[in-house]
Amino acid sequence: MPTPDVLRARLAAVDERIERAGGVGVVVVAVTKGFGRDAIEAAVAAGCERVGENYAQELLTKLPGLVGPRPEIHFIGRLQSRKVRTLVEAVDVWQSIDRASLVDELAVRRPEARMMVQVNVSDEPQKGGCAPGDAAGLVALARDRGLLVQGLMTVGRTGPPEAARSGFRLLRTLADEVGVRHCSMGMSEDLDVAVSEGATMVRVGTSLFGERPPREGSRK
Ligand SMILES: *Cc1c(COP(=O)(O)O)cnc(C)c1O
Image 1 (cartoon, rainbow, N blue to C red):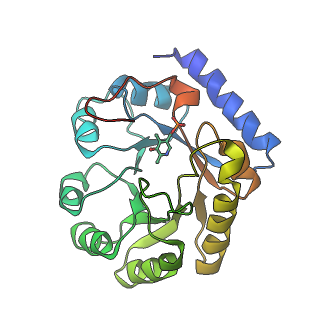
Image 2 (image 1 turned 60 degrees about the vertical axis):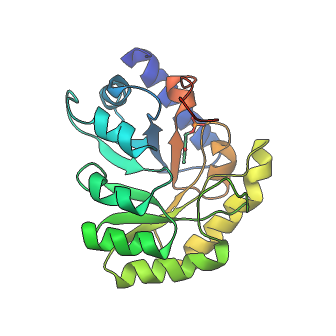
């Protein structure tokens, strides 16, 4: 785990990339998946107020025993409806809501939850997210159910950063159309492109914590 000083320097480097890409007030979510709770503690110590996690079980084992202030936890991974109930105390912002059944489940288990609709802007089957054409309907459904829709989220097209540009542009357009505050897009590799296309929130793991240890039973 990088020391707090190293982490602060890496955060400053991310901020500098954001600034160079024309971003103002862009929020950084430190993605701690794959690391232990020391990564969450280090992120908080370095001044990060928001942490992103992908895996329900991993998050639930990490949170108890966390030393120091608890950051705002953003859930950014694939989500099964039956996991929502187990996560209600752990998650503050649900970024990966991508279907009506999840909207319904979340509204029942966590009324007025802060959430985002995840959109698959690149039409890659391995990625989560609703089709772009379904985003407005899902946002409307979520609002109707009383959820607080804070933004749209996407994972950019795999490949060189520029390959993600048109998808990021599409997410920005959709976000403006439905009138949400946040456009959560851009990760370590492609955040510069995302910010230049209007990201208001980036999710950064590797650039802060280094390469993740391989995940058992997974290709990621
Ligand atoms: C892992 C992950 C990130 C962070 O990726 P890095 O390339 O390590 O910055 C961001 N968003 C989502 C949805 C992720 O799964």
